[in-house]
View 1: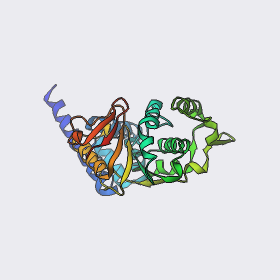
View 2: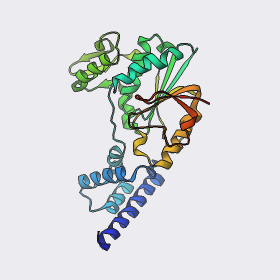
View 3: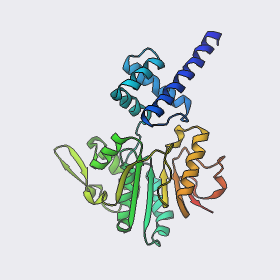
Length: 279
């Protein structure tokens, strides 16, 4: 690699650092400790779509144009979710977690990074089928207000119904998936009772603190975009937010290994990343 290429690479890092600092100060969204490779790729995706010349040109645009910022924000927090994603994990929840929750007088669950709400609604269906929904409260949070708005609307894409039905059945569904939605003129809407015990709210894992004590925290495939420092910070937040013997559920590519929290949990199901707070 030539000296010019090295200098260009260092300049780009400075530009990206300034862009992320500007976003934090101007709009309150903190991406400064996200994985550099991931954040760089998403920034350049937006640069090309905007027809900007470089990172600094994009920064000038998003600092002065809120709609340009919203377009970049949607790139930085790409929602990747589906109902009953990884169905075997929901089978493990039925078998390994819900029997213990059944003994509690009231159940509090936090879906951190809930995106458009599909996994929160999946949990609602699961609790309903196990007779636990009425004594449960699901707090589903995300930093993306547009995603939260969609979650509150209870609509799901009609082109995903085949996949969602397959996932539901593989997750041990006790009824037919069609029991939980109505379809009218191409619009599929989940039934109102599924949202009755869900609170959708904005929460930033990077800057906001704990807001309750939970028996279950589910945060799947969110921290893969964080660097080690931010990942450890969020793990501390989750630990502080869990009740004694509470459950932490991570994504398949995530782990507690090599984190300061590793010895504070017992592994309940390593394949599906289900951990129980030990102390």
